[in-house]
Image (tube, rainbow, N blue to C red; front, side, top):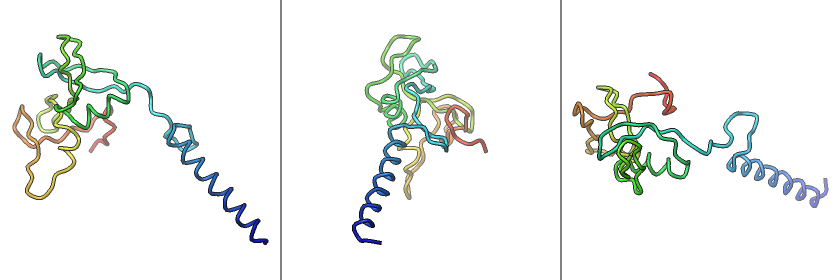
Length: 140
């Protein structure tokens, strides 16, 4: 095979692979599942002002910061109960079942040596989110 033909075939293969990767990242549906994330995500929330839990549909752009930052999220979600912008992502404690403000996924997942895990404000045990179908976490 001529070296020019080999180069052309290699370029075509690389272009096809890159095209496939871009389509998967942008949200094109492939045969193996995955695909585009829905425009709205349903999150368990709790208001830091009135302490009432609620479920909210938020845009994908707002869902990630709410989940990652926990109570430190800015801007906060507007609570449908009291109308104040004090809503933050919530997690259900695996130990007591209480729905509590999330300390944030960074605090939950980045535990180093000598660090203490966040505590559930209700039962004072280490906060481990309970697996739920909504969270996408597998049941034990």
